[in-house]
Image (cartoon, rainbow, N blue to C red; front, side, top):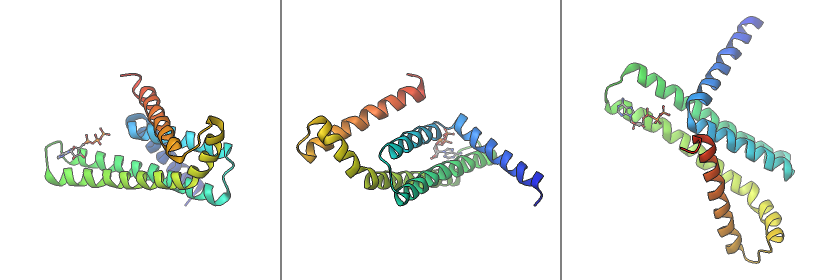
Length: 155
Ligand SMILES: Nc1ncnc2c1ncn2[C@@H]1O[C@H](COP(=O)(O)OP(=O)(O)OP(=O)(O)O)[C@@H](O)[C@H]1O
C-alpha cells in the first residue's frame, strides 16, 4: 500500500470517529469517562499491567460503540420501516456495547477499588467499608449527574 493510500485510510477512519463523537451521545460519555479514568490512573500511578488492561477495556468500549453506530446507519440505509430483523440487528449491536461497558466497569473496580479506598478512607475519616461503599455510590451518582448536565447542556 502506498503512503498516500495509508494517509487516506487514516483520514476516513478519523472522519468516522468525528462523526460518532458528533452524533452519538454515548460516544461523548465514553470519551469523558476515558479522560477521567486516564487522569485518575496517572494520579494513582498505575502499573504497566494495570494500564494495559484499562486501556484495552477503553479501546474495546469505544470500538464497540463505533461498530454499533456503523450497524445502526447501515440498517437505516436499508429500511426506514419497522422490521423485526432491523430491531434484532440494532438490539444485538447495542448489547455488544453493553457487554464491553460492563466489562470496563468490572475491570475499573478491580484496578481502582483498593487504591481509591486507601486514598479516600483516611482523607474522610471513614472507618467501615460499608460507609466507603455508600459514599462511593453517592460520589458516582454525583459524577453521573454532572456528566448528564455537561452532555445534555442541562436539558
Ligand atoms: N427499522 C426498525 N425496525 C424495528 N425496530 C427498530 C428499527 N429501528 C430501530 N428500532 C428499534 O429501536 C431501537 C432504537 O433504535 P435507534 O435507531 O433509535 O437506536 P439508538 O440507539 O437510539 O440510535 P441513535 O444513537 O442513532 O439515536 C433499536 O434498538 C431497535 O430495537
